[in-house]
Structure formats: C-alpha cells, structure tokens
Image (cartoon, rainbow over all chains, first blue to last red; front, side, top):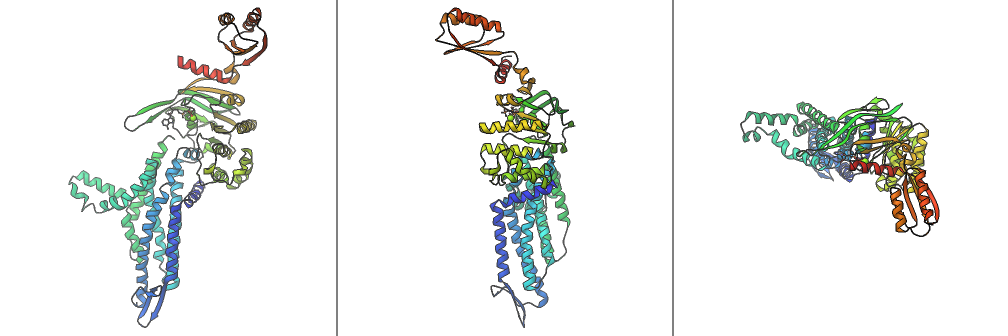
Length: 276
Length: 311
Ligand SMILES: Nc1ncnc2c1ncn2[C@@H]1O[C@H](COP(=O)(O)OP(=O)(O)OP(=O)(O)O)[C@@H](O)[C@H]1O
Ligand SMILES: [Mg+2]
C-alpha cells in the first residue's frame, strides 16, 4: 500500500523532469513517423515495404515478410534500448539521492516505513516509469506493423518486459551507488562506465583481462566480478532472439536478477546502518 | 502514562573515513516525559537536542541505552504511525504543492487516502496556509514552509508530536498562532516535545523543561522550579545617584546596576530591599517606582550554562 504511494509519487517526480519529457517526445516522434510512413505494395513479384512511398525492401515472397519486419523491429528495439539507457539513466539517477537529502529523508523515515520499503518503492517507481515509456513505444510500433503490414509479432511486444527488466537490473547498480555516494554523479558515471567499459572487459575477460596476469586469485576475482554484475549485453542478445522468435538463453537473465537482488540487499544494509 | 522514556542513552557519532573523529552528542542521558504534557528541551547550539529527537524516531541509532515511545521499545517501525515530527530545516519535494505534500506524507503515515483528504482542509486552515495550498512548495517562504511542516506533522492525528524549532522563521503573529495550536493539542491530550532556542516562548507553554549542554542533562523541572529563588527589583529614582551612595549600596547588596534613572538589583529577601530603600531615602533620593520581576527562564538558563562553563 505505502509502496504503491511511493511508486505513484516517484512517477510524478519524474514527470516534472525535462529528461523524461524528451524521452517521451523522441518516442512519439519515431512512432508517428513509422505510423505515417510505413506502407505496403503488392505486385506479381511479391510484397514490397515502403517508407514515404519509397521501397525499403526488395519484393518479398509472402512468407519472408515476417522475417523482414522482425529484423527491422530488432533495429528499432536497439535504438530504443540506447534511448532508454541514455536518457533513462539521466532522468532517474537523481531519484534516490533526492530522497536521501538532508531534511527530506527525515520526513520519510519519521513515517511508519521501513528503510528497505522506501528504497524499494523509489526504485520500483523509476522502473515503472521506464516500463510505461517502453510499452508505449513498443506497443505503438507493434500495432503499426500489425495493422499496416499484417505481422503481429508477439515476441516484439513481449520484449517491452525484457527491456524493462534489463533497465531494472542496471537500476539496482545505480541505486546502490546512489545510496553509497548520496549524489547522482557517481551513479551516472558508474552506470556508463559499466555499460561501455567494465561490462565489455568482463565479458571478454578471457581474451583481455586474463592477459594481465596468470595469478589464479586474480583470475577468480575477475570471474567472480563477472558473475556478480548484471549481464547487460548477453541479455540484449536474448532480446534480439526474443524479437526474432528464435530460442532464448535465459541464463543471463537469471544471473542478472540475482545480481540485482545482491546490489539492492547491500544497498538496504548500508542504508539501514546509517544515521541521518 | 509515560509517553517518552530514555534510559542512559548515549550517542557517539563517528565521522571521517581516514582520520576518525568522535563526537559525543549524548552522554548517559535519561529523561521521562508524561503523556499529555508540553515538554521543552533547551540547550545551546550543538548540545544534542536534535540528536535526541532523532533517536526517538530511529533516524539515529543510539550507541547505548534504551528508548521507549508510547511504551514501545525502539526501534519499531509501526509505532511511528502514532507519532508526528517536524524536523529542523525540513525540505519537501519541490514539485508538490502544499496540499499534495499533506496528501503524500499523510498516506505514508498509514492514513487512508480518503481520511487524509478530509483532514487537509481543516489542517491548512489551522496553520493559516489555505490561500497557498495550490502553490508549489519550492516557492514557499521560510515561515510558510514551517507552517506546512507543522500541518504535515499533524496529518496522522498523532499522540506524540516532536517539534524541532517549530517557530524558526515564523513571524510574531504566527508564533503566537503556533503556541495556541500547541496549547490546543495539549487540551486534546497530546504529548508535545519541542526543541527551541526561544526561551521566552518555551516558558509560556511548557509544563516541564530540561536543559541539555554538550550531551549532558543539566537539570529538569517545571518552569517555576527552574526559575525559583531569584527576584529582580528595579527602583526608579529622580536625578542621578551620587558615587558615595552608589558605593554604599554596592557594599550592601550584590549585583547592583545603575542605568540612568533606574537601579536594578538582584535581592534575596525583602529585608534587603527595605535596607536599600532606607539608604536611598536617607540620602534624600526620591523614589519614583519599584518593580518586582521574577527571573525569566532565560536568566536561569544563562546562569546555568555559565556555571557549567566555569566548572
Ligand atoms: N550526522 C551527524 N554526524 C556527525 N556528527 C553529528 C551528526 N549530527 C549531529 N552531529 C554532532 O552532534 C552534536 C549535537 O548536534 P545536534 O544537532 O543534536 O545539536 P542541537 O542541540 O540540535 O543544536 P542546534 O541548537 O544548533 O540545532 C554536534 O556537535 C554535531 O556536530
Ligand atoms: Mg538542532
């Protein structure tokens, strides 16, 4: 009940920020362009997809249209993913620090509200906002392709859940860094550093990080770190499979939810011990 | 019933990662507050007043000792639904309006949405904020913030109310209004615990007060008990006092001060007063007025802190 109140007001807090409006605006623009421009023409050679009347595909046999649509949906989902990560991180990284500010945290914690409950409510609020945005984008694109091209790709629709899931895993890291640093710069830097440098290094640790030393302790530390962190790019590959409706490797998802639980748990522990 | 009880409470803050610094904010602090009272906690800056309130809300973890609120051992999350709190320098989320603040924090205190809604209007009325209810709190003035903060502390109809400098930044009329609100709450049987620097104000409303300095409880009692003993007399005279008379008076009574046409003295007994009057009359000094003033809480506070510094 109180968690719902927290989620609702976090929603409101985010709506008052420009970053989220930009994200929603870009989504709307892409949706509108897709809706207006996509069309289909049939000829004796097959089906041709068009954008603003210009063909964007060769004439396709009827059974290849689905494949073509799915591939373009993968492209759109990758674009959305980058948008969500970039603008989403900027928009939401400040949520937890704002809650922990001197003078504000006193108000929250004087209520019959556990510290874990407060952190959970705030995180779920940020994640819920992202979910709405993702669902809005994916849902509208899915509908457009369904109505205009006749391809109803349920994998694409369900990818809105997995994209939000990836964001949630990343957010556990952001919230953890926010609790530690009580500001938003470190969570933002940490998230991007992980996404673009550390995550990649860990993924290809056998080719890169292993070369630094042959020390087994060092190598098991690197391995340990790899398994503790969320598996962003492996999950992204899973999302591509989901949209292409090919088989998905769920292992990275399971591993990442454990990682998210760990970061959240440590975050709560740190928060609980603190004096305000 | 004892509404608030602290038993040998100590709090040591440790700050700094590398060079650790320890601050003893509360040292073996014991205090009991009866339900239905207005209790004032006084002390100089950094005495530990805020720290004490924060331990009662589990915002700060005590280093040792026991704390009970409403006969419940802390820490306890649920008991906070029966407590109201106005923090010092509180900051509400700026994107909310005054009434949204009450709705939000009211729901977080465990009151149902419709109940909160029905309480908002009378509470805003009570603290004199009705006309600013739809303004974003980020545009509020200091006094407006304080008033909405008080309303927020009362939104769950609490049994115990903690107020940290409630009249800070509020204009004189507003301060009187707040005092009236507190008196009224007391009449409804609420327990009010307040921290304040404004001794004259605390004196006006508190049933009991405690004085805290450097983490230690110096004294506790009713305002009468704390101010008992000393009286100040101010004697108005015509003309000025000759030096010889003045020296003679100083020899006779302690703490005599001459300020233009007024002579102030701290006197233990009325016999002393009469001797002083005799002296003045003998020297043909016309007396125009005699005013008897009880020591204020401020006087005893300053004396107590001074003695503490001296020892
Ligand atoms: N979170 C904290 N970390 C470290 N030290 C703290 C913390 N909060 C308070 N202190 C220290 O504890 C002591 C008591 O502070 P406290 O805020 O309780 O005083 P106070 O009586 O409320 O003062 P004031 O009248 O100025 O509000 C001070 O020396 C202060 O520096
Ligand atoms: Mg204080």
